[in-house]
Image 1 (cartoon, helix red, strand yellow):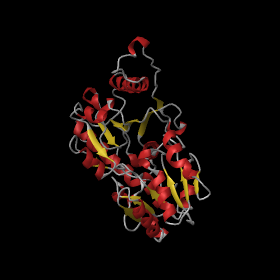
Image 2: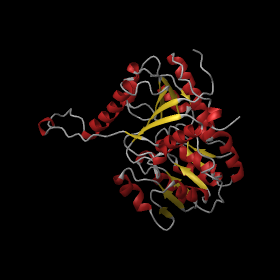
Image 3: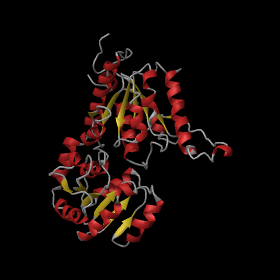
Image 4: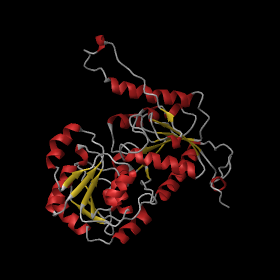
Length: 377
């Protein structure tokens, strides 16, 4: 049966079991999942989101139940015993996959694994529905090992060309770059200070952003969840002052207010940033970006929208902050509109779903066209 382009799809979207898909988001992957699910629903697709308890009710998510697991004490002396948290997460995803192999097997046209867990990939050969997995990080041992068991109908996309290249030795992946809601991340007036947003964790290195901003003669505001308390106490807390201000874990509106009033956004990863969603969000606000040249950031930040510095070169990042702050905010916003929109992202995911279904050899169920679902003519 030949596929009819533009038809509504029944999409199973598997998210993280660790963090709920709701504001304030734990990180870029949770924000991305929320935007993707909501956008697909608005475009007329049926989306069943499997996500952590406490996710946004508007998404009508089905909870991934994380069963409590505590092994017998007699087993703990075994140095090879896995942590209880690992087992809990394993059993949570196992439950989802068994449901998709059983009673829910024919409820969907495509399954989109938007988590970092290995089980959806490893169990994909048993699924009666093709699986698409988004690679959100550089290769990790568990997911890398699961790729060897992926079914012939399994397909992969990466959030940047840099991430796709990192995965190339293990699996081919097409590129679907992340996007942001341009209506939510609106242009702002700017201001005198720098801003840093993201997860407070060693690989994000906000302390280097602080050092660079101070070298550039700017105060800096920081916001985001503290994911590593020891790092926060050791590296960041001693730097806080009247010119280095930490605002906590903010909602999207709170984050938008902070970023849109900044002169420049600093992005300071010391790992290969898979994409750099905070850079795209800043540019959508018209706020230029100064960033380390790591991972996917050179694909996100261009000469019209910011400046890049060599990795972990704080002095060069300070120079990039000064140079980026001179850019025209309207031009930065126009660049974001051309390259960072969620509409572009969702359309590319629709194409990826179509290709995945075609590769799986199964046509979608009869359904009305997406255009009709949106009230278009």
